[in-house]
Image (cartoon, rainbow, N blue to C red; front, side, top):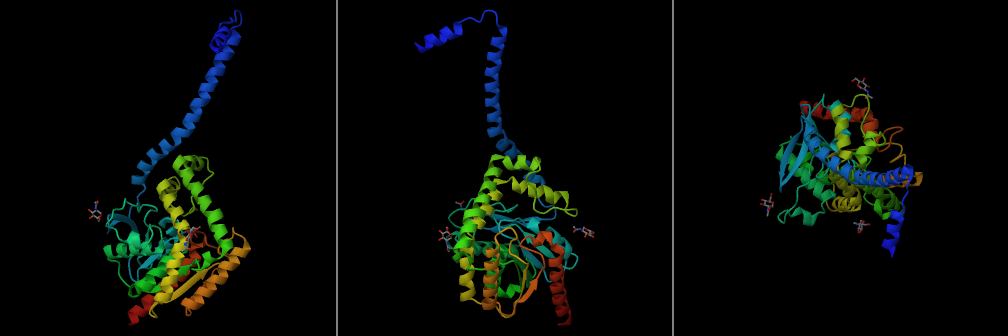
Length: 372
Ligand SMILES: *[C@@H]1O[C@H](CO)[C@@H](O)[C@H](O)[C@H]1NC(C)=O
Ligand SMILES: *[C@@H]1O[C@H](CO)[C@@H](O)[C@H](O)[C@H]1NC(C)=O
Ligand SMILES: *[C@@H]1O[C@H](CO)[C@@H](O)[C@H](O)[C@H]1NC(C)=O
């Protein structure tokens, strides 16, 4: 009956109205076109994004950098600039690639050898599929400090970096630097923590709410945008910009950051590092109690006015309080440097303030070395 009716409808001739026919046809084709558009929007961007990533991944490898086989089937990216001793090793903040150190590395490399690297899964240190023989996974979760320190240790062994070195870390990088210095104390002459994450911060409910309720979901959204190709469109539209930019940042560094913003694997590792930060903090807390830092390693802490200017003041105050507490307990003789008007973005927003202090440290070490 329905078919009949439809047939009737269709058969009802519009004898003298070609306009009506035209309207109907164009309406139909409009729907088809909208359908096609939707399909294009859903299917094409991820596809184009994926194709572009393949090409860019080759093109944007750091020219002076090296891809180092660190064993266990894993390869990591290391970039050293400059010459001299002591070597300075820079470990990036949570979820960031080594490009974040661009300014500081450039500046310090006139004085000594300065190395940055991408933690496994981030940047150009692509995580390979694991197999059963990699024992560290069982001891340490994939994206926690214990595992990262193990990776860094193997990287520095493989490349025969001169020891002892100055180890500088920011946020999660500071947790890593602490863990490394406590375990491999003879290798580290000086430990520098920039905006360290206090190890007991995840005992606070407000912080947990901020971290897991706001920050992690926003990073997961970024990961989703990268996977669907949306990030690439947002970058083209100028709505999404690289973190490290400015007049002295080379086009290559800009392009590499854009590539990583569109790269779901990188974004996924960034999410993991944030997600497991509470585990990382707990590991460092254990190590600090179980194996205090050797008195041969000196310690510097660099902080700004706030941990993060974009979070509520209450959270900033809590971070400051807990930082003070862990420094008093674990590093009573640390030298504390305060950078006015800065927050956790200081390594790319106030790089000269930081490199000025790092230069001083290197100079002191070099003077000691020659007088000894
Ligand atoms: C697992 O990784 C180790 C270390 O790279 C390698 O020697 C071994 O062949 C791998 N095993 C399998 C089954 O792929
Ligand atoms: C860029 O480099 C020039 C010359 O090296 C320097 O004077 C200037 O302060 C730098 N600008 C920034 C924003 O770092
Ligand atoms: C870290 O947080 C996760 C998720 O909230 C939780 O399951 C885990 O037990 C926490 N780990 C530690 C060491 O607190």
